[in-house]
View 1: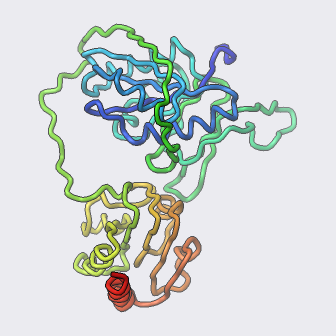
View 2: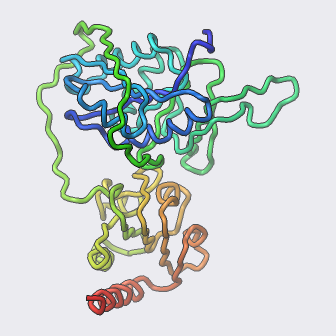
View 3: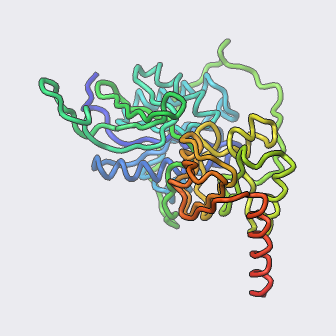
Length: 348
C-alpha cells in the first residue's frame, strides 16, 4: 500500500428519507479542523437515491467536495449495497481519513467497509486529532507525523485509549453523535459535486425490505435540548422524578437520566446520558442524585453550565460541576422550582 496516494478527509454523510442526519454536519465540522492541520480538503460522500439536491447543505457545513452515489438500490439503507458504494468510493478516490457517524447505520456500515478496504477501524471515538505516533518518541522506532489519533473510552469507560492506524489507509473511525461541533453554516456555499456509480447487481446478500415501521417518539431528543434536568439512582423512585419534571417545566427544559435509572426501568433508554447513552451539550445541565461515574460524565461534561445536587459531599459529580449543592434533593429541588417560578412571575 502506497500511503502517499491517499489524500483528503472524507465524511460519510448519512441521510435517511432524503434528510441529512445531524451527525454528518458534526463530522464535517471536525473534518475541517483535521483538514486544516493536514493542509488538505474535506469531501462528503452522499449515498442514496435522488439525493444530489442535498449537496448544497453539505457545502454550507464545510464540504469542499461532494461525491454523490445515486442509485435506486440505495433508496433505503441496506448493508450490502451501501457497503459496496462506500468501499468503491474509497478504492477509487483513496482518502487519507474516512469518518463515519457511530449511529445504528454507521456501526453496521463502518466495520464492513474497513474489512473490504483492508484497514483498521476505531469505533465510538470521542476525540480526534492530528499528531505523532507513537505519542512519545521510542528509541529505535521511527516516530510518524501527521497521524490521525483516535481516542475512545475503553474497559467500560474506566480508561481512555488513543489509537492510530499508521500503516494502512484510510484511517477510519466511527464517531459518537454529539461530541463534535458543527460549524456555523456558510449560507450560499457551493461544493464541487461529482457523481459516481460503481454499479449495483442484486444478489443473495441484498436483503429485501418488506416494511419499514417508524417508532413514534413523544419525548424531545435530549441531544437537542438547551436545558436538561437529569436524575440518577439517588432520586429514589420513578414517582420521585415528578419533582424533576416540575423543575424542567419551569425552565422550559427536558428530563434525562443516568444508566442506573434506565436499568431500573424508571425511564426509557432514549433519555439516558452517558457513555452507553447519548452525549449532550446543553446550555445548562442539572445532575440530580447522580454520583458522577466516569461513564456518565463522558456524556455531559461539555455542557456549558453543570449544576449538581447530591447529599454526598464527596460525590465525583462535584469535580465537574460549576455549581454544587450538598443536601436532600427532595427538599432542595422543590424549593428551587418555587423560587424560579417566583422569579419568572416577577419578571413578567
